[in-house]
Length: 73
Image (cartoon, rainbow, N blue to C red; front, side, top):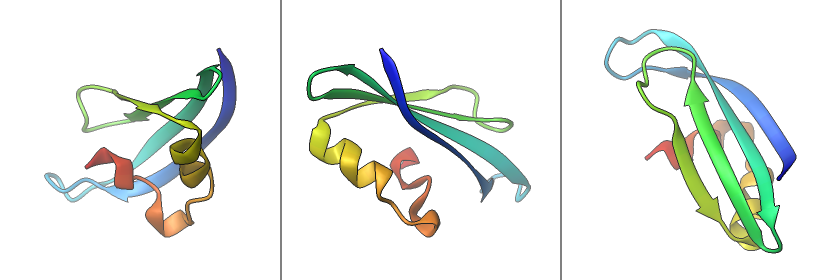
């Protein structure tokens, strides 16, 4: 497993309306297999894991800052 990219960004918690920090990490697991680990410092009680292929991983890497966190939906 290899860390490809990570980023930290601020977001507004919809329930408490408090600004919080989130961290996303993209890991390469195997050829054409990537794991996106998403976590936040506060409100979210559990982390999220998403399996991505190479195309989806490239799209995630090239997101604009205003698109950070859209994978939480």
